[in-house]
Image: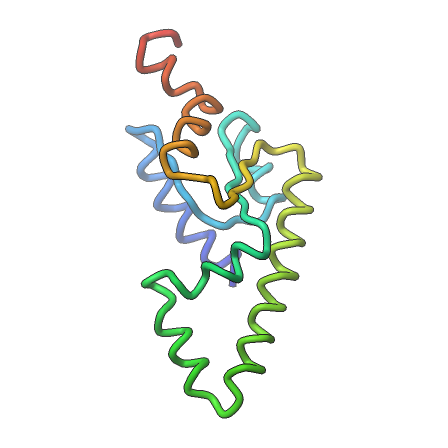
Length: 134
C-alpha cells in the first residue's frame, strides 16, 4: 500500500517540481527515497513511538478511525493492537532512517512548527537562496 500511495504522490511532486521548489511531507520507503533524490534534497521527519501513539487519534483526520475502533466489541484490545502496530512500525522506520544516513529531525514535546521550519530551511539552504547566495 505504501508503494502504491508513493507512486501517486511522486507523480504530483514531479509535476509541481517543474516550476517550483517542493517540500512534501509524505511517507516513502528509504530505499525509494535514496533512488529518487540526493541526500541534500531530503529530510525525514520522525517522532518516537510514544508521541505517535499519544498524538495519532488527536488529529482531526484520524477521528473516524478512533470512533470505529471504539465501536468494536473489545475496543481496548483493538486500541492496544493498533498501538503495538504503531510502536513496531515507528521503531522500524526510525532505525531504517538512522541507518540510511539521510538527514532527519526527531520530534519531541518541545518541537514546534516554527523550530522545525528553521531547521528545514537550514538543511535545504533556503534562507541563503532567498538572499541570493546560490
